[in-house]
Length: 224
Image 1 (cartoon, rainbow, N blue to C red):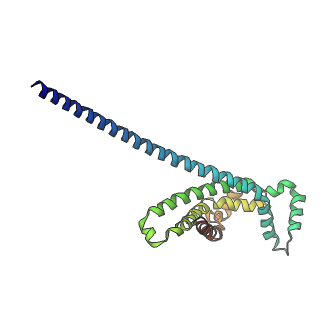
Image 2 (cartoon, rainbow, N blue to C red; image 1 turned 90 degrees about the horizontal axis):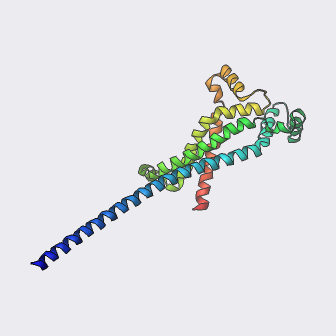
Image 3 (tube, rainbow, N blue to C red; image 1 turned 120 degrees about the vertical axis):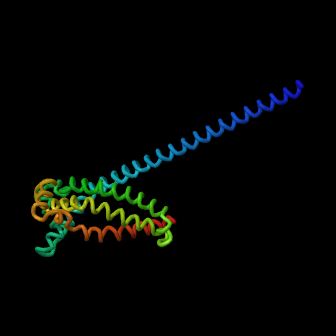
């Protein structure tokens, strides 16, 4: 009688210990799953912030370094109407009339255009690429190696559409017209309306979208 009672007690204690161990293991696994989810969310957020910071910094450096080239290019295009222009003549003209700072005319508008344009492009590219990769209908129609090119084309169209008015103002400033960004934009709007602010949108899209498609296709070929 006593041995039977002892066996029952030991069995029940084993059941209690096993149930407690299983509950503790399940709670630990749920905690581990929650930690993994939180880590993934934090990684995605930090990755997005890193993309914005890296693309913005690179765009600012490129704009500051290459602004003189843009000034010379725009002036060459304007001077072509008067006769065959020369780079030496443009450089002397800009330096004699505006000094060394003349080669950075429109730089503020350039930064206002380049920074959001690059950040919008990179973030939208990554988001669109993930959506396309996860869409089975798109994967059935387009090979996965061409998805980065498609995402780049859509992302560039979005960024150009948002920042096109600022690029127009920058081009007007670089060509030699005096005035600040707001004043030039208001004058264009007063004379031509909203359509005037998007003058040059189509040629810009026709230039940038194929460029981005070729760029990403080459990257996929080289890296893959």
